[in-house]
Length: 379
Image (cartoon, rainbow, N blue to C red):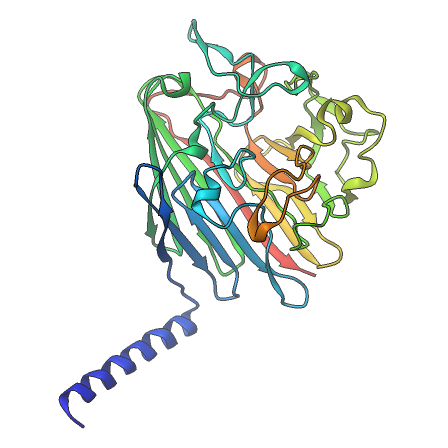
């Protein structure tokens, strides 16, 4: 055997040993690729996280977006459970916030106005349900439409960072944001957001994936079974802005304290359902410290289960009521009415305009922390 053969043999053995070691320890590595380029030529990376059970999450620097999440059904068949697009070029057309990290303030702010420390602020009004304008999900160019800086970090994770300048989209303060996605061998996908500011500001960072546990993006989510760890919700006006009331769910179609088929009461004669064209409200989670279970979703046919845990005080359940078949997504599928749902852990919507709500104010010296964990299984 000559020197070249010896080197190749040694290299092959080294690779085999490395791969065998990973398999034995259950460790995985993050795969990093170029996803595409922005219109100005700036390259955008995409990262793939895979655990020892074969679950696979893909995340990109554009919008700190979860591009796809593949999990097995009860027979072991893998499928992507999220709505979205195949290419970066198509993601640039994303108006439904598929998979996005939204901010500076996720959800709605009435009239796009708030007052902080005696100073009035005006934001773009980019949404008007019921003909009533509001600021939605951070504005015309929120965090979902910017390129973050991404890099793999220890623990089968990817860290994205972004600095929002003072005055960006009308919000005060230079805000430094870090979002980390991690996938462990317990089949938990964690989205964790942290932020600091150099001036008082408001903040409500939200993860906005659309889920369909059947793995078939043409199927309705009305047959899926939902449980929410919430005995109250926030009633709204016709503009989907909270009125300030915290109402009990008991005896209403908003009660998901026990496992309930989503479509069972969706057409009930109930004001909240009429305003939202279905479910599109914030549920108030039971008071807690630290991270707790907020929601459990099950698809009876595939057996897939997704549990959502968080340290936030509320969860927005949106039933895909405004999906209308005009968005062409992965594989050329046109995303039809109620073919996916969102379970967004969050602070209360319009909190800056309701002193009785948990505060959304972040001040210098403080650190904002939002933890959201999706745990996948099948039964």
